[in-house]
Length: 452
Image (cartoon, rainbow, N blue to C red; front, side, top):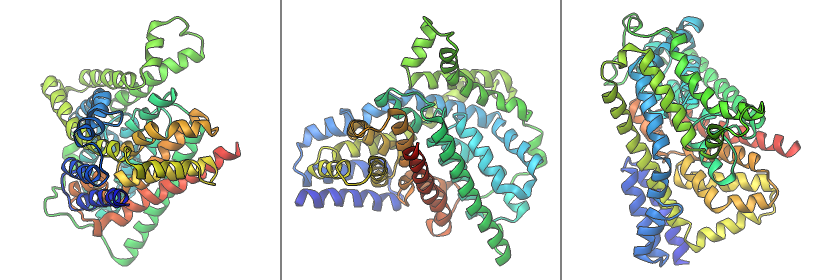
């Protein structure tokens, strides 16, 4: 009983500390200590094993995915400093008009994240131009925050097949699938997330206009001159080349195998056997192409790439610390009871899988952390219940991207800090598009999978 209370106390404390902007790495260590002590776990073994170097250890995760995080951050830094990200957004402005600021934000973020640019870099890249668009269209910043969250943190990370996101890579290590697992389910779920999310945001935009609510800049906001920005950006078609190269490189081995061209090829065999390294190589190749294409980043390429690598450290360590906390939680009897309860529940396996993945992601406040914990502790039982590996890959990835975005989510807190908004001001919009919309879309996708 004491152990269960301690487990719940540790989980509750993690959420409470995250909501109060306490460093998530410190919070994860502190809460892990609470769980260790109250559950009577071996102190030294739990800290040096379960938390750091175990199967779900923080350093195990960091070591496994460092190259992918670093490659994505370097690519994102290059796309940002070369103004290629801005070029794509401005092309959409010319095509759709500044009054479509929410659509432009969502589509720009989606293109960048699907192309491999990490979420935090996308937010930083889009924010200055977004302020200009919001002012011209007189749209409240809270809706812009929702648009950022929808475009950068939902369907391109968990649903769309082929994306090099960490959420799409983690299942491949356990299930032996590739990044294009269950493509029809992914496309269906992704389209539903986009449609539901944009319907909500546009409805709120109309309501805001009718009530007289408009744009109000934050105290540190600097609104750029679009004409001045336009002088420094490459052509939009050129800006798209590195993004297309990422997806094409990832897709090439699959197409070659389908066409029978990869038989006996060492390169094709290598790509198929490296679900983490191959997307990282795709991002590196795209980074090299971007350096060659964009003069703005050719002046100091090594410094730019070094700064990009530095950008990867904090997101990687924050995610790793949360996973380390989950590694400790997974050693408790309370977690074992939870796993047994969901796997053996009377619910249909697809639905109990959704409940399990959602619960773990919600507890940790991290979709990648929850996904890693699920794959390490619950994937095998659900495969045994008859869910195909490709289906499990896609559906669990989507399920992990719902309740992870509760108010204690580190990514949500970081985004609100960047946009100078509070939970009270903007979390409703963020919560709808990153929690309610993905949950609804995932449930409908599960129904489609069960019907086919």
